[in-house]
Image 1 (cartoon, protein in one colour):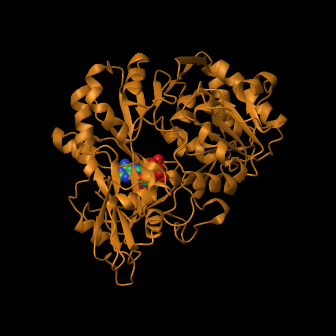
Image 2: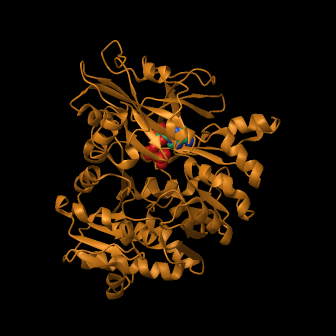
Length: 544
Ligand code: ADP
């Protein structure tokens, strides 16, 4: 027997029309290089409708990829809705990628158009010849001073909107499984992989921002997503805010702690979210701003140290809400809100709970699996295993079928590459990572790629890169280098060699010369042994 309820698609047009109809009077503020812009949701919705028409006029395919290369801004939110509500696929490009990765991703996704903030466009112009499929570059003038090349592919966002009639009807996406957005994730080895979100997954994930045991977004909130909109949908905060009818504040290009804190105070922001590096940087300045309106700080992307959360609790009266997830999980998979069973604990014990990644949010299922035996391990808070995840907003495969088999189990669960123990209530405590990556300030550095670039040096026999804990960036790379017999080399020479090959922020903070890279029984680099060898290592930059 089947249920007899209406089968209506869970699709982004609902979020758009709901915001337009019920919350037209609410505000979106964006900090710009010269001041602030204020847009009502009604005005924003009209602009979304204009972008929709413009995409048609420009001849973007019915399911064409619409890329963005933007800060967190009102215009970016226009594209967040205009692309998927017209059946196209929003592709948020990570502005921190370096050129080869960026061109690979744009070509792999088959982006037809890129909307780019003028202040960031300098990074794109040298690459246009390597992205032959991109037919239009639309420059959003965010008061940047970057010159715009004289090229027929270059268009101006405001002129495009002015020339477009607002789309008059109702947006309709009939099949909720239609792709809505995509985001690439760094592969440990090989190329980045495309995660493709559907309308259904995005709508369901947006609801998580509204749950009472999470950020609990409501119409009364003022939400400021500091976490980039180019990184895993800014954790769902933009769509969640529209759904709830919250006012929104976007930090724009200036992400310094002072600028962010000033916005939080000025606009009486109630809910915000950002990676630990942001909150670490802001910590010494908290006393300079009135943050009394703030009730929730969502933080994840790297482990939130107990000391950081406690410092916030002591300084402004609220601890940090710890979240865990990944691009493949949309990204919210767990949230750490202490529960009634924690009420009888001491404040210090509760702080230990908050330092955990938390409990799976509704509709997400987690299990811990022993990588060697493939068997599930008990939730006894001691035995650890790889976290595997399943749920309606968890990826089941990558774009163009890549990476299948490695990242996904035979029974369809996602292998996260994070190793954790869980207590009997399912509160996750991440203890390790099988992914060979360094996570610096919320963004990935591929150890393997860095090693390959180091080993390209003619005097180097082998090299291994490991993550060293760092107070500000959470992790920074240490390069362990073996010099070929009879050769001599300095750390400076290694860094000079790398400067031409990798992004500046990928450069190792230190180089240690070792006799040999330890190997496993099958001859692979044993990062575990190396990490043990350098446990407690202090990076020179951390001392400064
Ligand atoms: P995001 O940075 O948005 O979480 P990514 O896909 O770039 O998404 O990175 C996901 C990975 O980051 C996780 O698999 C995990 O290794 C790490 N990570 C994310 N959140 C946490 C957390 N709260 N604690 C520890 N590691 C985390």
